[in-house]
Length: 166
Image (spheres, one colour):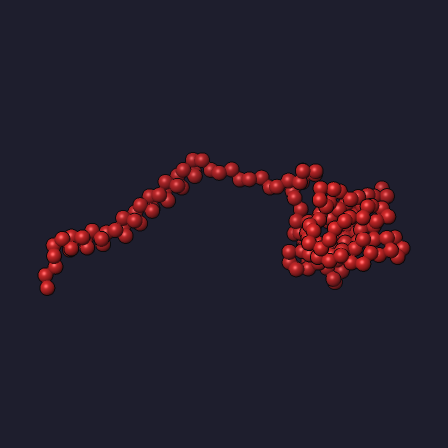
């Protein structure tokens, strides 16, 4: 059977089509690389906390403190409240709650309400806590989340809904 000359001409042009597409895409990639080399995009600066001009805290520092089993170290962590615990009014009164870290572990926060105001938080709220971290097998705890009453110890705080409790 003899092929029509028009169809064979069409098929020969069709066979070079993928080569043409690859060539066009390669040229586009080269031009894009050249343009980026001449006008590189600026690298964005890390986010800053408006009050302290320091990097916005997360939970990486807390996870590291747990892994290294650190004791009596200053720590700042931003995390959601997992659970509110029973208010402890034995001795010095403390508001207690668990923070849920991104690796699934928790940290107990013991906030002295004789030294600082009660923080009106509920499970699911995100807070930033700064205080003294002490490792234990349950994930550790943060205390001293209030202003300092001693020149030998730095004060701490809890930030929630734009208000600082210290």
